[in-house]
Image (tube, rainbow, N blue to C red; front, side, top):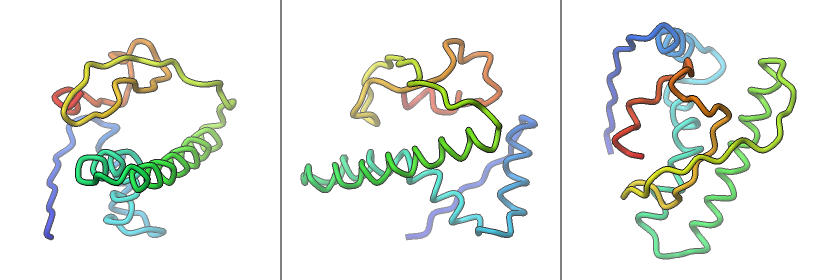
Length: 123
């Protein structure tokens, strides 16, 4: 399968992110992107295409482990205190989400530097 993704960042933080991904010598662009995408979306993809509940659960456990490692790395990198469980926010069910609950650290997502408005069609 050939998958191409083209993105022209408009926000400064997205420009920084793309520059970091392009210039990273430790890991290739494809590996970096797949690590980030798989961590969250792989369970969704497997759940959509598999009737095997045990396989979905196995994949979910692996993804959760990776996300926890990523969370710990972010905490250490930013010098943050390890915070307790994040607040739970409820989103309406969509064809792309099996779960209606997502975790966010900030009640007011409009003030976040990270712009995830591109996902609004999916959530």
